[in-house]
Structures are given as structure tokens and as C-alpha cells.
Length: 405
Image (cartoon, rainbow, N blue to C red):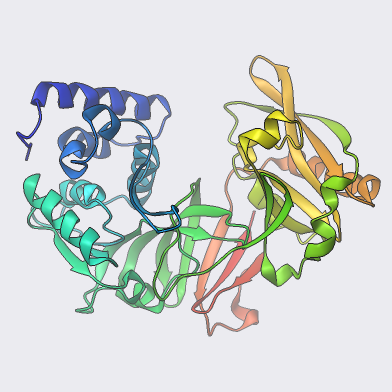
């Protein structure tokens, strides 16, 4: 299944370097996924870039909208590996992929499902679907069925699958995915759990009729789904090169928030240390789901604003912060030792002292237990409150979610 379009030795060498990089991050959990990476020739699916770019450990944008935003890409190989490990495809499985993009992921799925399994991949745009078919055929994976259609509507033939994987940022678990996932099956979906764009790749097991349970979440970021399941975000501009991403349902006072950075910064260091290798990736999600009476937002800051010292959010938690009215406090960090950082807070606004105290108390609560993984339950949208598990409730048009710790 190897292409002869490029020097095989060079491509193979670069592939091994990429595999070693992913391995060093601990993302491979099984030899089966690693072997699939070793077999699939990524460069065949990315003919418009050089070999080094094709095998670089970063995403490759393959289509942009007129305004320059990415519409489709070959995802970061590291997150692809993590999601395939979450999916746990076995030989003979019928697999549905939502978002064919380049076709690379469909080829990896075909390797994992084996000759006794099957893969259907759906792509919204005809040009991308055609390109995926071309790449799959050139790499020797013509058994993969590429469908041009809206992935939120599922397989047009209504087939049932043991595994479903979504490779675009989703706002909801569509009715079609519910219907087409076999009992006992698994769906891995990068689900936006908050209007700020906070996203987790969740591995849901279809445990009962109308119930799916995930105890495995991976931090990720994806190009949002387009089509019927498309959903916009709400942004508040705080300064040049700085925006706050918020949840519209929180009814933020955007006029007051837009003035937050005109107030002086108030800094507070917590004494809480977090090791670099500590499984603390979900601190931001924890803050967003505490029902603290505060609203969660994510500060997005460009390099110019950071260089000018306008804001300094901790990169590890994607600008996580909490706000109340026109006052914002966000998480920052500074080195505490060679292998740990100390958590801090920076607040701007008329009630900075009060908000600092509230968020500091929350961080201390988090530090006592340091929960590693959320438990996310997904229910059909018609499920009454009495049947929902404890935790924060998130309502989507076709799904009700509970997030607990």
C-alpha cells in the first residue's frame, strides 16, 4: 500500500521520525495504532506540500475560506494518534468517519479495521471528497467509501457502525450519530462543551438506549463543523490583538467587559504548584463547570499584545478565566522549579479584589483533589431532568450532557 510517487526511503525515514515524536509524547497506547502510522504514506494525501511538511508534527491547512480562515486541514498527527487510541478500532469493525478532509485518517482507520472491516467517510465539499478519493486510491485504499454529504446527517444509507469518529469540532451529537452507533459501540467526537470554544475529544460508549458515557477526555482544537450542525462563537474585543471568547447564554455585559483592560492589573500568586508532567489538562474545564456564579471565558492573545505586556495568560489552559460584570480574572503561571509552575491570577476591572478572592478559592478547591478526568454523560434531548446524572447540565438541540468530576 505504499506509493512510488516519492523516494520511499526518504518518506519512510521522515515517517519514523514523526512516529518517534508522537511516541515521546506518550500518545501511542497500542502497537496497532503505531503500525498504522508506519504503513500509511501521508505524503500521498498531501501532494501540494514537500515531504518535510507532510511529515511534520503539526496540522497542514488544505483549504481556506475567502477570509483566510481554515476550512479543512490534515490534523496534527499527535491528536490523530490520541483519537485513534480513544476509538479502539478492532479488525472487522464497521467504521464511520465524519470529515474526510485529506483521507489520511480514513486510511489509518482502514488499516485498523482490516480487510474484514469497512470504512465510510463523509465530506461536505465535493472538491475535498474528490481529493480524498484520489489520495485513498493512490495509496491503495480504494475499499474506503467516500461520500459527499453533510456529516451531521450520518451515512445516507442508514447503516449501523461499531465505531464513529468525528474529525471536526462539533457542537452536538446529532440524531443520526445516535441512531447509527450500534449498542455497545463507541463514538469519539471533539465536542465543544462551552460557547468559548472549549473543546474535548470525548470517547463515548453507547451503554444503554439513550445514554452514552465518556470517562476519557483529550484536549484538542479542530476546525468547526459546517453544514446543519454549524455553530458560531461570541467574541468580545478587549484590546488590539486580544479577545475574550464567551458563552452567549451567559448574557455577558459586552460593553462593560470591553473596558476591563482599561483598569490596572491586580496580580495574586496562589502558592499552588503544578508539575509540567502532571495530568492537569482539564483545569479550565473544571473552572467552567463549577456553578460558582461566575462566567467562564477564554482569553485569546496575539504575540504583539503579549510582547507589549498587555496580558499574560497561562498557555497550558488556553487563556482560561472567569468574569463577573465588567471584571475579568484569568489564570497565569510562573516557574516555581525546573519541573513545576506556580499558578497565579491577574484581574482587571472595577471589582478586581473581590473576583481575585473568589477565583483563588476555586483554585484551592481544585488543588485539593486535582481531578484528572471528567465524567461526561450524553442523553437524548427528550430525557427529563430526573433521569440525568449529577453535575453541570449542558443542553444542545439533540443532546443533553452532564459533566461531573
